[in-house]
Amino acid sequence: MVHCFSMFEKNIVIDVYSGGVHLMEAPAYMLTKYYAENGFEKDGLSQIAIKACKEIPLNLLEEGYRELSELEMEGLLFSEDFYEKAAQNLRKGSVVKALCIHIAHDCNLRCKYCFADEGAFGGKRGLMSADTGKKAIDFVIEKSGSRRNIEIDFFGGEPLINFGVVKEIVEYARSLEEKFNKKFRFTITTNGILLDDSKIEYINQNMSNIVLSIDGTKETNDKMRPHANGKGSYDEIVPKFLKVAKSRNQDNYYVRGTFTRENPNFSKDVLHLADLGFKQTSVEPVVAPFDMPYALQYEDLPVLFEEYEKLAVEYIKRKKEGNGFNFFHFMIDLDQGPCVIKRLSGCGSGCEYLAITPDGDIYPCHQFVGNEKFKMGNLSSNKFNYYIKGEFENNNVYTKPECKKCWAKFYCSGGCPANAWNFNQDLNIPYDLGCELQRKRIECAIAIKASI
Amino acid sequence: MKQIKTLSNNVLKKSLATGGCGECQTSCQSACKTSCTVANQKCEK
Image (cartoon, rainbow over all chains, first blue to last red; front, side):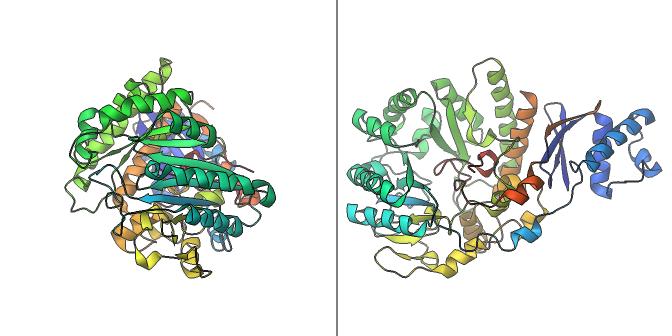
């Protein structure tokens, strides 16, 4: 399987099963496109192929064919799928290596697209107790086997409204590192309203990453991220976020925004964040039921595709001028990256990564919290739903018919299971609109790599 | 090669033999969480 596309005047071919990525001149590219539809011809350039590429001079086609043939023999083009068998017994008995701890099911903002029901996840508002937080640490130590590195994400709602408990959890986890031979890495996501110098200092000393929520320009941000009284949040958070970014030497953080149908021309919001001085950015599509007014629709795709390309053009320009910034979805590693096993098996939710609510309930990830069908247990009881764990463990790009056919499978790893469930009531049917955007982003990321 | 420039080699097949150790971070397509996508992760072995 190959994927051929042209962007920024470059012809790019991705050989899906080797991970090979090639830039091609027109003759080789035209031939590759022909062979992608009709199968590669190992015995030589056929008259049919020549006819299909009739606008190309024969000598160049022959040269192109020789080069394609060389790559094919090296296993870098039209390569076989070796992985389906390996996928069959993946992650049986996988260990829990990361937790998303919902420190608060409450929030001091009222963001309109909040998947968490503005902090409450469809249930009672509440804060996690230190005792529950410590139980979460005990749980992950117990369930992590011999795995040394453990990740803890502090999430919510808004974690900073319960920061005292965040600190108690961090200290408790650290106190157990030596005894259990564990190394904890903490991250925190925040709307920033309650950030102050002392919290920033603590976060910088103790957390390997911090995610700062802001959607872009003041107009964009304040439309979707207001306080309960309707007042916007942009003016308060920008100076604080800049302080965080500077204090972390412009690394190990993200400003993270969401674009919606209200701002489909989101490239301007990304560039605004870059212009403010943020070097680590991410702006991502809202995920919402189709009947929400701010939800993205299929008819928005042409504009969104154009926006990703527009952003990529400016991204390349700024990188070349020495004024570049990072955009999360444009970051790609073509040299190494994770092994194919990881690539086909997905994010790890429901088996290696679990979410814990303030009451100690256990869910596959933050997006499943509140969906009773996926509740896997509670920290205060020994019972844990291994059946649900198994459902997630058995989920990979080969169990999903759409992923199996998709050229992007090893860059995407199968999409978000929560989206699959929420849109299709089936972990094995990915959210197709998300797939369309994902494929476009990967094309842009690779085209950027090819251009810099 | 005159017409083709290869940006990335055969990274996947090789990793089949040695991969699957489970040491890597969990990943998410969204930068709210353990912030890397599969496309950008590092192998931690």
